[in-house]
Length: 94
Image: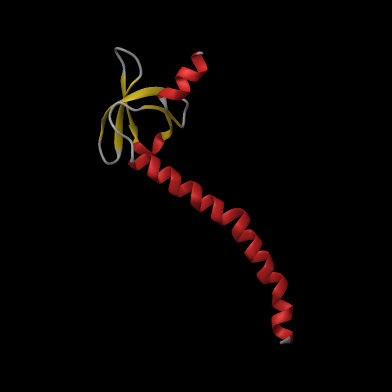
């Protein structure tokens, strides 16, 4: 019983560490993986570098973005930071 009492603070610290740091990070990673898996042609996205573009073509590991009428760039799929919703654009312009 005395051995358990000695390890109780260590167990408590690990539990707090898990719920405050590890669990939220795992949740964000699952959300990001779901977002990357749901990308489709025509989505407007922002890359990690801040480039805005529209997906013209995509494969399992790469996407082709149209950034203006004459320019198309190829990125790794993991370089996508966010998908821009049309509703957000309309609210900003109002």
